[in-house]
Length: 119
Length: 111
Image: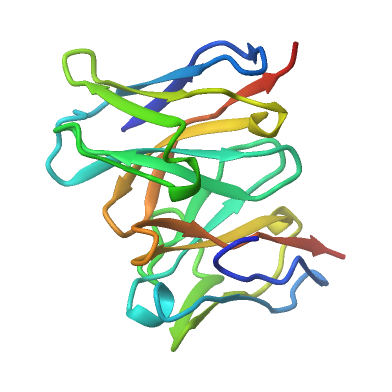
């Protein structure tokens, strides 16, 4: 079955860039049916959608994060990535990658990766 | 501030029925977009519980059901069990934001 796995540094310094990669296994990221996305959850808080990408490279970002977020896709590696620039302590969160049906549900989710922003 | 509004907490005794509400607006639930529900057990990733307002993925017990009306939706859990203790999130799509929106989450406590 489809599985997603996040990878990247668990500690990022303030004002630097946060970069994460999601590796998809058990299915193709080039599926025309699905989109791929990032969702984060600050400690003790709720879920926050960050952005969505299609295998063609089309991207959709949360407006309030739009100027700091960049998502990309590498179909040859079956991976997609997130870059969040100029991070602050407020960006400390568990970051999940997931598969999305456009304007619909999110399933499955990766196990998540905790990223702490601290000097 | 979440776009979708959920009560922060709900509780019930084993065997009882509880409902969790999710209120949106004319740009998301009210615009006809489906509502989906996720269960997040402590220390784990969210899991899809209900999709398309009232459909259960394979493996989800029929004790869980969803409904939608107007700008709101509800998740009902019957025959409460101890393992149902978790956080529950509603989710939809918002046309004005052109993206995914979540409720703030409801913590279910099984007494």
